Every structure is written in structure tokens, then in C-alpha cells.
Length: 166
Image 1 (cartoon, helix red, strand yellow):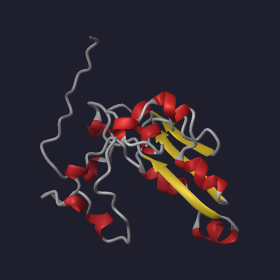
Image 2 (cartoon, helix red, strand yellow):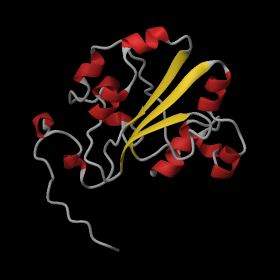
Image 3 (tube, helix red, strand yellow):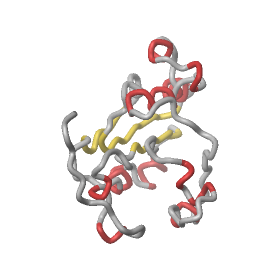
């Protein structure tokens, strides 16, 4: 899950640049009509895992209802949330959260794939698994530091951003 990603900039959603070449080769389900409730993580994540539409969502409503992960866990699924930086914002209140980095870490999102259970571990587990991988993604003005240089494809890259206190 990359809640800061813009669906309109995914080639999976007909964007003219090839932004998702490897995903295109996989058997995935792309949610192409999915919208966030806000532009900040602590609003967008709880909303995405709630039962409320964007226009009806509030944090107060969320705090008093079961979220998607809790519903899945109650139905005999093992639920695990792997996080590389922004936290689950309370969505994992009753499920396992594995934090691999924080907002300021230098981990690339590939650390998520290196941390999930192996095929053998999954086959040995009797429960079905619902897995969430929460990427650091494209937050903030330092996006150029969020991927290895060999993945620079779209140029020029903005890498001289100075953060100023307002």
C-alpha cells in the first residue's frame, strides 16, 4: 500500500509513461477507482481501512467501529502489517505490526519484500494470511532519496530541495 501514490500516474491506469512495468507482468488486482480521505497519512490510512466512504468518514466514527483488518482477523485469517516508515496510524490496533523503518530511515521499500514470510513458512502455517505492505512511497520533497539511483528513469530529478520552516 502506497497511500501517497497518485492513481492517475500509474501506467496500470492508462498513464502514458511506463511507471509499473513489473506489476503489469503479475497477476494482481488493481484498485483503479479508490480514493483517499485526506492528503496526510494519519487521515488517509484509517479511512482506507474503515467502512466509511470519503464523504462520511471522520476519525471519531473510525475510533468506534471495527476496521477491515479486525474484520478479516475475526474470520480466522492471520493478519500482519509490515511498515517502512509512516506507521499504521492505529489501524493495527488488534493485529500484528512489524515496523522496519521510520520516516527518517534510509530503507528503500524493497526491505518490505525481504521481510515477509517465505513460501515455505506460508505453506507450513495452517491459517490464511492477509498481508499489508506499507511503503514509504512518495512523501515529501526528498523523494529522490527514496529509491536507488539505478532506478532513476524519469529525468530530470529534483534533488536540490531545501526545507524551510514556515
